[in-house]
Image 1: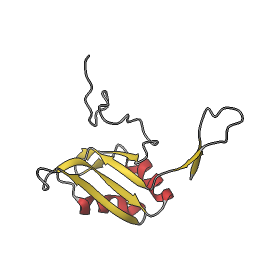
Image 2 (image 1 turned 90 degrees about the vertical axis):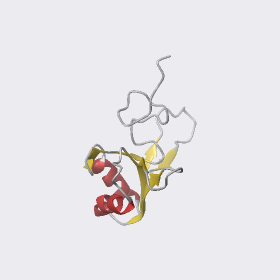
Image 3 (image 1 turned 60 degrees about the horizontal axis):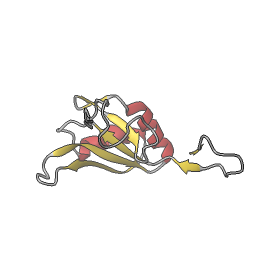
Length: 122
């Protein structure tokens, strides 16, 4: 699946990018593990991987986010569309494309987003 970049100047080639097959999944419950993440997303298609990121200091503790990689883009797009802002293990999750082009999140330090971050009042 390709999308055309907006605002291309006259004479410039139209830029296109492929949607990622890898999805970021944020807001995970501390109880969500690789197996339950895989189970929640595998209904959309074949997965290459479902991985919950763990704390470095305590590898038994979830960091509250993970990644799901699909074998094809259309399955990833369907999963993003249908799973974003849904309940998983008692928590409302955020699902976005790994390339960052699919959602409103601004990345690290994003204030005003209920899924994390934490801006500065300065």
